Amino acid sequence: MHPILKDIRLVAFDLDGTLVDSVPDLAAAVDRVLGELDLPAAGEAKVTAWVGNGSLTLVERALTDALGESPGAEPLEAGNLRFLYHYGRDPGSRTRLYPGVREALDALQAGGWILTLVTNKPYAFIEPILAQFGLERHFALALGGDSLQRKKPDPAPLLHVASHFDVPPPACLMVGDSRHDIAAGRAAGFRTLAVPYGYNHGEPVSNSLPDGLIESLTELV
Image (cartoon, rainbow, N blue to C red; front, side, top):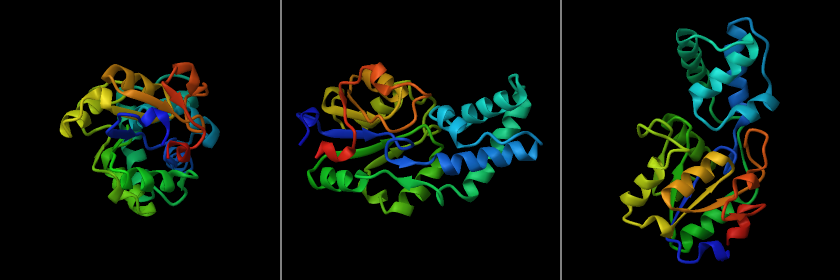
């Protein structure tokens, strides 16, 4: 057992960039939206730097990059709806599970930890992706970016899962790949653990000073 798990009862995981590499599917949906507007494709490299704050922000960044200026509210809303349509049709065919994730989740579940999922991805896409990898049974509760009025880096989703299971925040751990995960965890009073292989807007997640950093989730167990 990793020392960071000492006295921890509940573990909250981020999804994109922590458990799964979803950029190929996200980029495909973004590029379909741009193509419909006769704008150049963004590609996976740019999308990697844009993900992490929910679909609306992702689309806003893509449109701003392609247009050279911020889109208006109506074009942004229309673009987001088209993105949700395209991504909803195929949210997981190119998405891959990171090495060691299944083994870590199996071991943590067998060890009695409460496992939860807290992502900024819209809730409707969570179940199809988890089901694709047979991971839905691992999580006692999953929250998407639209499950509550506020999302990470606001601490509200983490405080919600802690309250839901009646676990005090100091007995909870947030595991993620970005500064938003670390900021949310710290603000909620959770212990924080980062993985360096995900998406963090081109910055090392270690800059956010998490309580721990591991190269693979297998190091947890």
